[in-house]
Image (cartoon, rainbow, N blue to C red; front, side):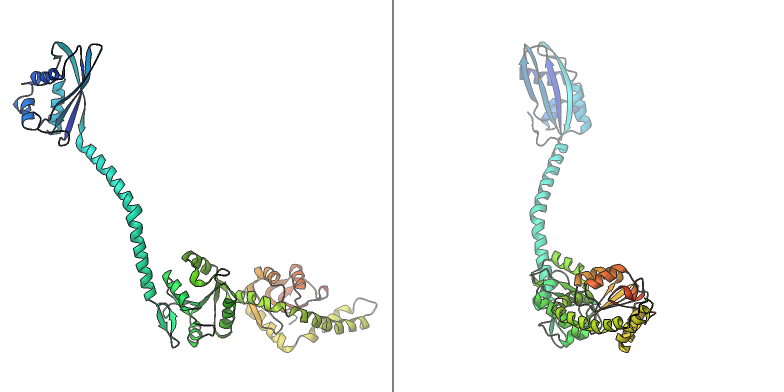
Length: 423
């Protein structure tokens, strides 16, 4: 009878049936065809529609309880939704099945295409999830591998010394100097194309020339060799910033995250020089202490011999003490430094030979002196000398402090205090 099934139908009619008695399935099907015959006209005759494949096989599911039958009728339909709804409504006109009264109520019309669409959506979600978790990561790995290979191919020989370098060294305003070719390859893999290698501890002429026109960051291994390279570069080239790999690690061993973190924490060359200078100055401390003792003895002896019972002569005695020890060269040096620092809120830290160990902001001066402890002979800064600085300087064995002004008199400390006015 039926030429279409649930698979090929567009709609499925669900009808509830309740019968006041006991009947069989053929009785229900016969009542459906018999009592709807001629009701809807020849175009919607159920027998003709079933013969043409517009209505599928009618399924009747009955259950008998206490002498009464109830269940469901299922009719597949490939008609349009309007004609299907008319067929469903026509079934409600059936009042008797066999000898028994019956009550038929159309429950719903199911659109099979919606169910198929939902199934398609769920399957598509599953396929997309599988694609995302399996295929795409592989694609990303391939892309990353190809990109790294391309970056590695970009390494060039730069300058007359044929130094391994990235392709952007010539045109970049900032460059990164590393120790060897392997370090250049590591930085290229991670997207840094403005790097160049030293190829040894001696500084090539190419590097010296580059540092004159570019902002230079030195990126060295976290070992003593790295410290030596920094000192060598500082002596012959113009360096701006210094970066060190974590202790015990080499640049070529770092991950991209470690490289970025290290470069973000770069320090000025002056600060790096201070840190490198500290260990070597410790060994000089024992020889400096006797020198200060012998210097103070001849100064204090005349004071004791000249001192009168009154306290008034102390001021003229202190003035010759400082003037006699300040040479013309030192005066010129301190004056020039103060002029350079005026308005900058900066400070110069000098060693015994008046060489500049570094320049720091005055806000960091106390902390820097505390950290270095030894190796500092003179401080020249744009500010006012106060008691806190004097206390720190005395503990660090500093001889001279030069500033714009001072809240501490010369007689209140053993440190030589010089101001712009006295200079």
